[in-house]
Image (cartoon, rainbow over all chains, first blue to last red):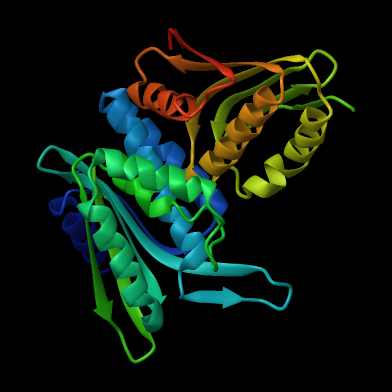
Amino acid sequence: MLATDMYQFRNYLRETGIIFCYSGYMTEDILVGIGSAIKKKLTMDEEDRQTAKAVFSVFVEQVQNVIRYSAEKETKDDMTELRYGVLTVGREDNKVFVTCGNMIKNPDRDRLKEHLVAIQKMDKKELKQAWKDTLRGETPVGSKGAGVGFIDIARRARQGFDFDFSEVDDAFSFFTLKAYI
Amino acid sequence: MDNIKIAATERSPELDFNFETNTFSLKGESYPEDVTDFFGNALKSLESHLEGLDGATIKFTFELIYFNSSSAKILMSLFDMLEETAEEGNTINIEWIYEADDDNMEELGEEFGEDLESANFKMKAIEG
């Protein structure tokens, strides 16, 4: 039973094109570890260097978003915290995808949606300008990085990205972004 | 000011700031856990050094393989800082080195370089 369940799970992943799957607390060590395995796998597949670098880049931004912002977290008195998210990397119709999902607080949903819809409408030139303006601007309130992660993902995801929200309860929704390279 | 030299790691670049010779470089990968932790002190030292210069010649070399968006913010402030120093009458020579087959790193170099008016900017492709 044990092996059958796990094998079925593995087959489900394989059928949906998933090569890497991680669900759990994300840390910077996990980012470096999985990142290095992704690079190795893409090199073995003789994926062209531009694609491999773009995949890695989108992966880093996605995982750092979870580490910094996932609303599903454990915090200790000494301020250490762990944040939960789900990551998959795989292939679909000759494209590589990097998908990441995590909980967000419902009040943040509209703002995030608005931001992502605006980014999706931008062409290459507008994305560059938004990227520069954001890098030069003050770091947005509540941001722990440059606040430019999604714009960066849009610039690297040559085949675009999809996103979605699934309401979990009154307080939380599950947010997912799938970027295609 | 004491020179600053930090060796590269898997996720942070080699940082070499020589305040005596006015040669500075960043080389390698840049996606540190906390960019402020990594770059903070070096950038503060650089900023106060640059403010005190008059008629100096500076060379800043970027040879990056990959950087994340938080590092991009640091790079942007570095470029703006160097441009400002050039506007104040110093000669600033910036070199952006990228691997010849890395179109993205070439494009990013062009994007940082196109905003410079007073600082000199040169792109250089090397074999990866």
